[in-house]
Length: 494
Image (cartoon, rainbow, N blue to C red):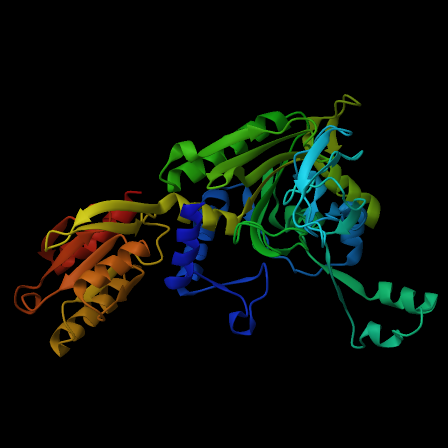
């Protein structure tokens, strides 16, 4: 976990991620993305959108509201089923999700260290209960009974606070409870459902023919029991999802296509292909609506864990919303033969393949994958570690940093002039004139800037600059225009 510690420290020190509300002590599981974090996140989302939407003729976009009609979540099953088994340890008071812990054989004997007052941390033994759970913190089998914990964030819609009609000193009346329930809405726990309930509107307005996809990128909210590993599992996060509607009988083919496509996308922008893998779910892992699913996993410092899921959802969601809303969420193909009747003209409910990615997980994954260290020697002959982010240039927040050798007015003016001119070609760059040149090199290595362009006094005379490569530290002196072309062409080649 040493790598994780270094990356979390880097995120705060260099302006990628800050703890939310930090000056008030912070709010657990909520984070603010700083100037460089905003750009990295935006770059990941753009590359995803380019690949999934803009470069395809049969995938379109959607931007839905975060709060939708509560019946959406009733029909989808989230209100009744979107819960996890919450368990409390009676020994150390830890709280955890039972289904996320390795289970032991009921009745087996385990040993743990007591936390009870007066026991002085003595070792005790006991038997595992019927559920097979033991505390992940202390190993104690003495636990509360698992109880359902809803992952939905509730809020209330309306001009009057419905809680104002409840007197905390007396039990609420049924009328008060009914009023409260009538005003309850939910923050969306996923972006997917909006693409199902807007299926007909999108299909008809755009004249789309099956197979086609609807993609969406946005925030989701889940009231997690356990939040862990920095931004890996948090209550507020961003998703990049696509629902791909296909003809019944072709879903296996499309599941294979999208699984391989999504795996190759991560490997393209990462550095270590072997850190990414595709893992098929076994039958015990599958959601009740899914007949097959693959996880794209990354080898995080704590082990292999999910980065993106690619699921075959069948027609569960369209069917559920058709029943709940009484709308006919089906597709009619006038040229296909209905296999049930043998007649030309087939109305059916499409099957759905869902590649569902976590943007914030991709953010963490690419930072971990890019973090690099190398041994070097200073100008005085001392050995020194060099730290740099080997980010793919298209992911890097800045593509170049223009560094005037000194704060001399002429050099600063030239640096800003070059920056203004180069930005016209679409380069995201910064002009950095503070600290020594060595410290500025180190800073931009750490934030992943692919190229550092040094402007010196000779530049005022010969119109040349020195371009330094982040990964190799190799430097070359070239004319202004050639330096710009070197940087832009290196991005286009990728």
